[in-house]
Length: 256
Image (cartoon, rainbow, N blue to C red; front, side):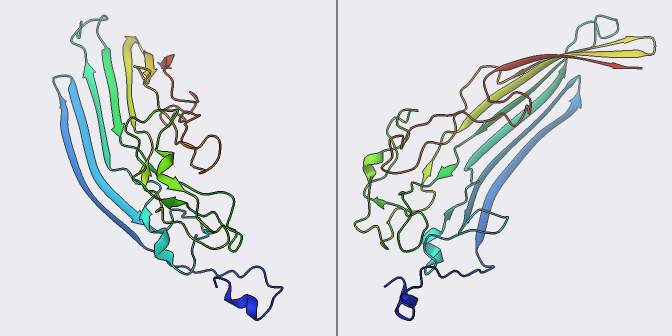
């Protein structure tokens, strides 16, 4: 019986424990290539191949494990785990009229690519005995052959547990991966000096190629939208841009 204390008090419905315990393992390979500013060009490229594994990924306290009797049941890739991450940035001063007022042109760019974050397939509603969300049984791999926003993972690879009261599903935590990200930001800058006044005109494009940046799919097994993606990511590189569709902005800075 997964509620042994009910034998002592039949009216007992909830028993909670709080522990400051857990495990976190992180291993990574990090490579960095840098070309310092020479002949008007500088480059910085970094690549990370990593793996983070934990029991829970909430650092602010209050986390309820699915199975408090077996914390290892929750062990899996961290919510923030990314297998491959590549970023590159450059600054290039265009060789156009460098010694005249026609000069001062500069092109800056950032390329960012990473594989998807993990997610867990859950089985609503909450378990009757614990009050926390369960996971279904896993009967297949779960990865879709050709993932799309209509079906990001194979929902037929899961089935509901036979007992909704206290049977924990066999599907692991964070066993599937959501969409990755690819983004190119580019800016063209024209710097000009008029006596003691310096001006900088900037044309900036976020997500230059308008590459779609999808959020995670719906993970509630048995719900109408399970496996589908219905939203886009927010744009961390541009706080005023909202979502990640292409954004172009024009700016002028004066210093005197």
